[in-house]
Image (cartoon, rainbow, N blue to C red; front, side):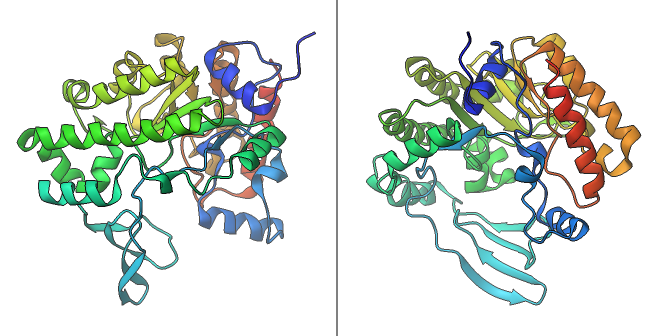
Length: 366
């Protein structure tokens, strides 16, 4: 008799194509609401403390190891000036930005911490020491192991906002980084290589305490028009770091290595798969992604997402079309059904609940 799978084991096995008792339900960012959306749902349900995951029976998946991957120490959050409904502030990444006080929109990015090689050298020395014990000294490993066991979750390292394009962009800004690939290539290589050194040092420490199941890389490096960096330059600048991650994964028995990038990811999927990536999300439909086409082209790729979130605002008929897409993908395997990004505030609770119940049925149909 096959042993009962934990939630974490089920997720990993599903994505790498091993047999599961059912497809995991409610996994990924495609089931998470914006803050405004959650407020709407709490009003509509009359439940001011509505917990969406608990209400709809979402399953456990990954739990992030309690370590610090970013600046150590982080920048202090600092309000620079109050502008009425807006506020100018510096965040923990050292980025100066202007945003709404209620957090209801993407902020304006005004100034970044790295404007020169000198800035990078100073930041590297003061906040990016790979061996700084503060990166893991606050971790209560016995408690973490017990929590993993009680929830049945898989262990993940890597999270937002850490990646080999995503983090340099947060250091320099997208325009300066884009120019830097041409005008300061050695600086960009140094930044990417050092980030890999920092993260692999931390991952090695985690691996001494628990088995790592999943390494995640956040890039967010595509738009509707495709990748912000050409495949050739992605190969040249980023893939050496990906190769280091892949070697670590093989040596430590890590079964999943994933990338999160929005937009049209068709140029990146085949390239990154050659360098050890076996899972992608969220496959935004409005950027031209069709997960059924990806499945046909890349049968060994773990796919999460790819259901059009815009259908949730339209109603049952549109939702049923996405459910049919989910059913096709679940049938073919290595897929976790989810919408293609956070759920926006034009989605009613009634529609979201309808979609969740239909997709849960699909997950338990295998």
